[in-house]
Each structure stands twice: as C-alpha cells, then as structure tokens.
Amino acid sequence: MKIAVLDINGKDTGRKAELSKDVFAIEPNNHAVYLDVKQYLANQRQGTHKAKERADISGSTRKIKKQKGTGTARAGSIKSGVFRGGGRMFGPRPRNYGFKLNKNVKRLARKSALSIKATDKSILVLEDFNFEAPKTKNFLNVLKALEVENKKSLIVLGGTNNNVYLSSRNFKGSEVITASELSTYKIMNANKVILIESALEGIESNLSK
Image (cartoon, rainbow, N blue to C red; front, side, top):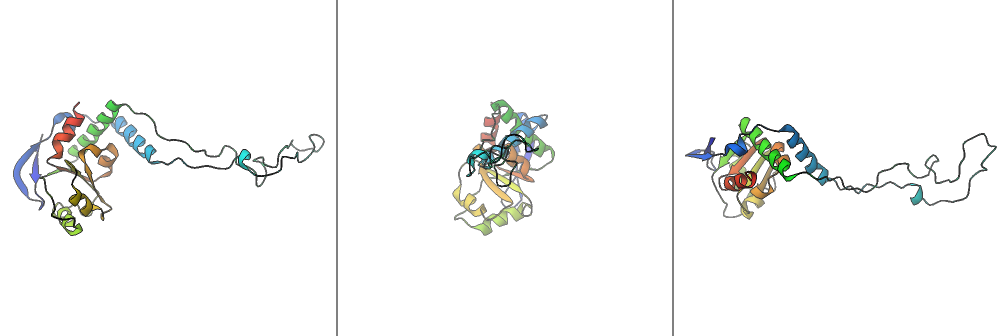
C-alpha cells in the first residue's frame, strides 16, 4: 500500500511511502477498538468521588424513639439515610475505574484504527521537518498547507522534537505526539492523522509483533 509523501508546503515530493498491509490494511475489529477506547477513557477518571455515609456523619447515637407502639417504623439513629441530614445510602466511594486489557487486543485495536483511517483516506505522510525555534506561526502555516487548520489533527513524530511540540501547544484541535505515544483513542478522535516519514518504521515495528 503506497501513499504520496508531502512536504511542509503541502506539495507532493514525488516519493511514495510504503504502508504495511499488516498494519494499515487489515479487517478492522470494531470490538477491540471499543475496548481500547473504553480503557483509555476509564484511566482518565480520577475516581475520587465520595459521599458521606452514616458512619461519616456527626450526630447523636441516642435511640430517637421507642421501639414499639408508635405506629411507625423502627428508628435507631438520627444519622440514618431516611432522615434529613443523615448519611447518603449507597453513595459513591473512591475507586479505580481502570481494567486490564490484553496486549494483543490493544495492538489489534491500534491496527484496526489505522486501517479505518487509511480506508477513509484520512492519513497523510509528511516528510521530516524541524523549526529553527518554537514558533506558533510556523506550525500554523504547516496546518494551512495541509488544509487541516480547522480540523482535529494528530501529528505523529518519529522521536522527540521540542521545537515542533512547543509550536503546537496553542492549538486545541491539533496534537503532536511521538510514535511510542500512539493510542487507539487519539487515532479515532482525529479527523486527520499525519504521520511523519520517520515515524512509520517505529509504528510498524511496534504493531507487527
């Protein structure tokens, strides 16, 4: 599977990048994608929610009325959840929402996500580039040249590049990551996935295992 390599001006360089069929052209497994995205979002949850239950409420422990003869239900504590000011019954407690997912399922999910984007022609390959210094304007010019300035875009670098990364931080709709940080959620959340040429080898070696 071949795709044209573009430069930072959005022009065709005349070269073609070979995309592995085992990574970019598989039959997508939608359930694997669902599970991986679900795990990613679950891991973002802090899980620090807490409501005061009857054990956490300050109040008298005196039995508030006699057991029998009142014609109403028994009541032994003013801190009971049935009374105003009492503890909350079955309220949220701190917990970890994360769950385990097999490595092979996660790998399948990322390959499925990339295959979906490739089928939708939402993947671009860009030749390696760098900026002399971090500058937002330079990064904006690249987005305009690729016609993605008004779209959610994910740019995948082959390795750490501080000048490009720092230039991108003012754009909410655009995210710059390295190949090792690639996740199913980030792939599916982007309208366009822009792969830097040097990132292809790392992506394919990680996902072809």
